[in-house]
Length: 123
Image (tube, rainbow, N blue to C red; front, side, top):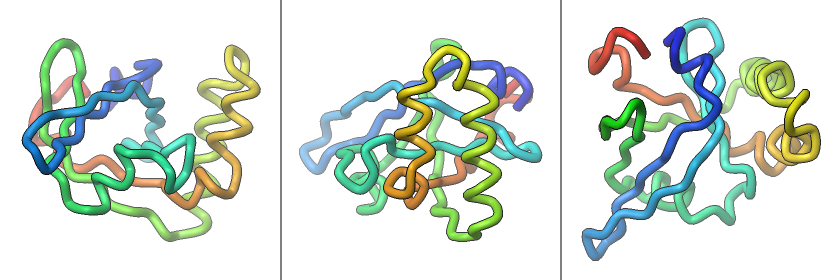
């Protein structure tokens, strides 16, 4: 997870019903050894809706496509810590977008990436 914590963005890939994939770069933060992502556009985001509909999901890291599961986070204290992680990691370079991704609409979409540890030790 250490390298993932230093990675500025990952590519989220979600499979559509017709079998095609869509890809979107997203920010990722690591809190207590677990990786978290959010939809900057809240529930309106296509990748987020696909994940909720149980579409196959993978991320691209270091040139590899890695299947993952995304698990919604509904613990308010953890959601707040993820917001703090976004501020700490991205605010100096991207203060405007950080305000968006830490706002209430985006915070509701906080999800934990699962399945990474078993795939590659360096993430």
